[in-house]
Length: 240
Image 1: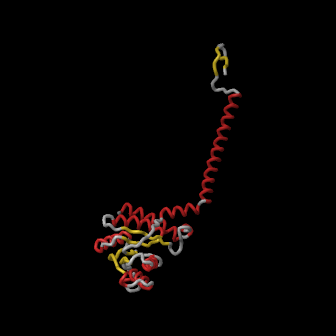
Image 2: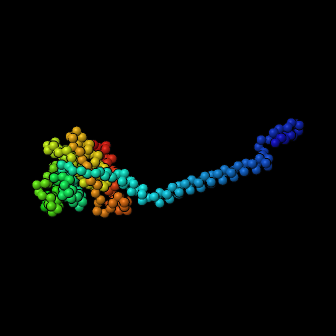
Image 3: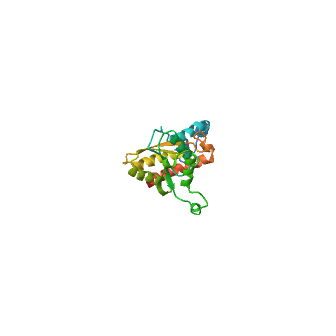
């Protein structure tokens, strides 16, 4: 806007004065900016809630898919022996007996699990003895049961025990029954440990007593087992 300079007849431009149309234009711009920001926020919020809603609706198949992608399920075939790992007495030992009676293998190998302090006092029964008793009660003859390893306390040591037995006996095929989430670590680590021996393993995925792959996230035991196996698998990957 132009203004005459008092007493000089000189006309100067006032840059600090904005005319009404200009003010209106700026105000409209501000309104548009606020509207755009609110609209963008609303759209983003809608997308986020929509995605969360979709995940909630599809949570069951998604969580089942997560479990199944972790679980190793293999078709078992006749083998030289069934390897019975420590733990899982309520599931693994019964499955080992069933596989034996169905003719999948003529021998059940039982890991010599490390004694607990109370075992040494005679207060509790050593785990290896419990596994043997379950097998015997389920009709597996004593001559078909072989103890392997020496006071093993981990999947790592059990794999080494099997490798040592393979080198002595010359066995080639083994079935390892174990719980759902344990299958991945067992399959990977046993194959890695037995590499170069000519031996191979097949894991038999077992449902634990309190959950399956279709409801594991609804049970505390399922959540704990999944988390533990993920952590242990990462540890084994970097440790061994």
